[in-house]
Length: 300
Image 1 (cartoon, helix red, strand yellow):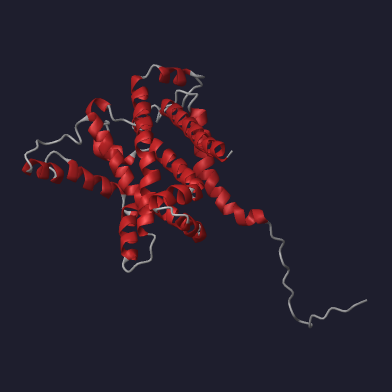
Image 2 (image 1 turned 90 degrees about the vertical axis):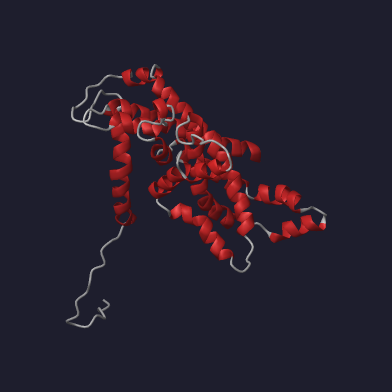
């Protein structure tokens, strides 16, 4: 029998068996507490008439039937859909052009990259207040228009101008974020393709359309998916510029603003707000699937 080579008097530490689940447990606990449980709670509450301070009773599909006859719900759905239509194309195209602009390693380009990315890290509250100050009837923009002989423009009082102004803030704030995504993708585009196209006589525009765009198609789909979800769930920009009531007669209310307005307060209708949240979730998932399906169809 072989003898142990461990010197006498030496304590042998037992190596405890480790499991991957032990390392994943903290992250899973956070996901369960802040994602899974709120989601399950929202689904359950959507079938009840629960209020903030009162337990709810099961009412089946009553909340969803009420949604079909709620004019404010359809206004909020329209505004959220328009937000997607107005914001997503701009956030797919403009950051790509911006990335092409700052892609070259020339002196001082790091400063411009940082400047373009600054709005991303800025607080949305600060950004919103700055734009409100700029677009107010007595703000800087209207003051400049007044000096040019134009009357004050109701950027924050007209229904459609207010929505367009909020879209502008969203695009302005998101440009730098998606620019970084495109810069990472552009670094992986083979230079040989551009050189071959240039040898064939292709100009900058043609190289962009025939080389850059096809090479970045998957990245463009990713940007479209991310920006679509973010635009459909917009809250802060419209809330800060339109106010908690959603602008004139609530005409600029979005779905997330409607959830906040309906489900908060001492007498908030938590059950009804949960039903709206569930509808937002379903529409968001469908929107993501449509974007991914369109990408697969293009590949085939």
